[in-house]
Length: 368
Image (tube, rainbow, N blue to C red; front, side, top):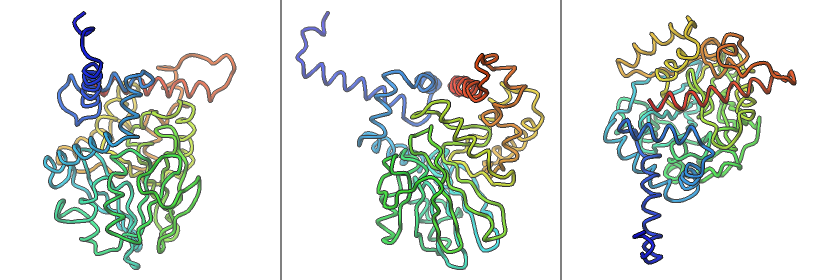
């Protein structure tokens, strides 16, 4: 074969070139159908060597940061005012501000209005979170006239943690919170399960929810101090009618994490890390077509998205009624997709199998 006569260094260069091409196809911004299909099929088979190599490079080396910066530049050019129009939620002295960043992510500002103190959740685009110039009239630290004192990171992926460096440098007293298991960039204050972060009247509890990454956390803003609903900032654990991919765990791990969320109250507001509502509800209709709650929600979401309006927040009560990843205990879904009776009688095991099958079907569905 012709390549057998090549010098070793040229073989190495060619191999690296092919690997980088694969990474571009896998991790680059959404584009043509062929690229989305390849990415979906590779992610659906996340235990395969190619995906593991690409994922490790993305999360553990400077190559991942370069891809994040490329995505950031493209998103700023394509969506100079953000990918969605958002509305703040004002409670008794507390404001929650969703900020659309990148192509479909959300960052959040949680503000104690009286103290003029702010907490940022997953600030992937530091310019959007800091300055109203980019996303005017969207929310920002400058527009609200508040002081950023804390950053809460749900996990290490660059589309959730990429703004940590710039914001922590700009705000000298800002603390960066996250899991010590997850290599959070510029982490200053490690958190464990059920640790509480206090900022003014804000009481925010970290809950360990591994599966998407080993150290994934979600953050629960306690509604009692301001006499309002609690707010769950779920990162890539839970979306409107969806859940995240299991990159660094098993179906059993992800099921346990989702059950942690299921233990919260129905009126808890769900603030997810991505705008995936329309796509997720479409998939939910494939696996549970007779669900009337899903159909009603889909019609509302489609109206919102026609006007480029955000679909956040949902409530956990709503999610229980149509999110298939929270309904692995439901007989209708189990009869349609379940692996059959578990000979050991272990209901947890069969729920995990169903969750894994749902995730595999969703990965293929997204690639279409």
